[in-house]
Image (cartoon, rainbow, N blue to C red; front, side, top):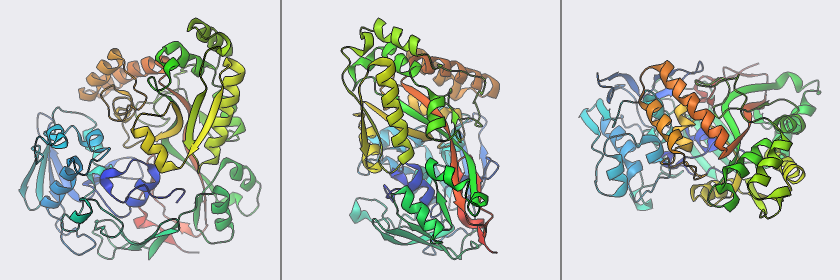
Length: 494
């Protein structure tokens, strides 16, 4: 673990490391496969009504929670509905499941149940959404739709799931959590798809990248993520070079610009000036030794809706200076100091922000103050929309462009932490979200992409590519563009 888990409650997950951990413990009705396709999980099958609004799921007959209780449709209904309980105050339930009929009323306390969910019988449940949306089944892979044993949730803890009361259906159960030290999972022998091939997973919590690397080299870890500096050294190491792997992921790293918290960002020309002053090639060369690809688009390469021919805003310092002068800040005169926040356990992002600091001072006369924050604090302040600027990746919650445009940048979106608002962009997203013709739908999102890149509420920096060291005896590790998948098939053998 690169960071401390931010929560053990699936309804509150907002970050990749925590989601990566909990996907081994909990499951939803559907899941991702290594070839980036949706597949049945706790649901054995499903059907969709002719109007595209109602999904009816048949639950597998012998799926059990770790406690031994058999999963029922009541558990599924409870698990999805609890995210809208105002007492829980989930920061993400509306974002991912807000299309369910009655979700807004439940979240606001106007209703005590979720009217769009119907338990038909013990093994059958239907979910009705407000409008037909081509992407919607994908959202059920996100942790907000993970299935919990409603009898196990500790009501005395405010209805939250903790490390002590977890009871999921996943291939592993959580057996130990020592804050700041480690997390242990053990194989679930009753897993519906068959018991995992390994006895368990040990996850030390190690915030320092160099320390994580040393643990791997001294054979205390079987797999580890790498900083860019370690990658360059390991490529030359005769032992480690064959254990070094690069995994493509649906991730775009951005610099977010809050149009309300930093007053000059209200003028699009100031935001555009920063975009033109950003040399992405320099960042990927200096920080990542060209093991990343510069990002021009909002949507990451390889994902549905991406366009590798799209050039975005190029590096053009002269254009940047001219825009800034037009906005009333010639040579940066009059611009307040800009604070750029980032997670303190990611040395590569620290280097990235430092290069941005140098670029903006040289090209714009803008003084930048880098501000590292503990990861959970960074997410918390992002949620409250108080950060003026921050460097953070957006990892696909599911493999659909809606997750980047409508969910991240629409003015009504809970995740619109830049406070960006453009009625034309919103209208294109609204149309694309409900368009059933895939070609027309993607064309609408491309038009939206042109608008948001030019408006620059965020600046795409580079696309994700995860470097890891993996021991030669680790086999059958399932991965997709979503990153690691649950380790149910992983084996350890010489």
